[in-house]
Image 1: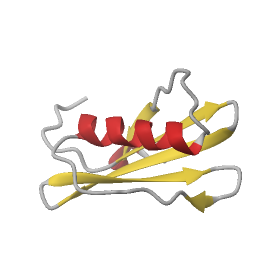
Image 2: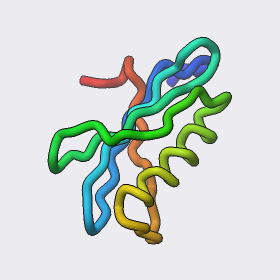
Image 3: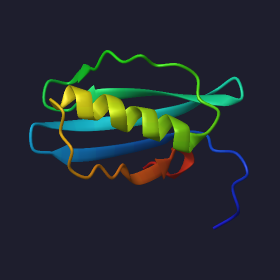
Image 4: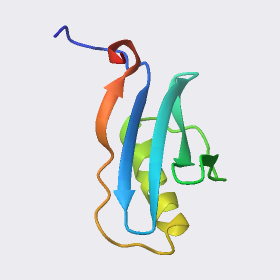
Amino acid sequence: MPHRSVITAAHAEVHIPVCDLSLDIMPDGGGFHYQITDLRSKCLIRTEGGLFVSLDNAKCKAMAEARNFAGGYQGPIEWTPIRFRDEWP
């Protein structure tokens, strides 16, 4: 697989006891923004959003918002698998 110097987009799903969530991270103006979807209701979750300087910062903020949405869930959240846009079927 060739080395990627630019991340185009990422998508991951996480299954936790009270809700199933999807995380989408997209590049925007040199940074990244994200959106979280509740897979059970098929609705976007209202988040603070913002533009983050790294993919890790966006994932960290998304994790905090997912915990709040899940009623303070403190279990593990692993945003996997990460699939890049050009690898999607």
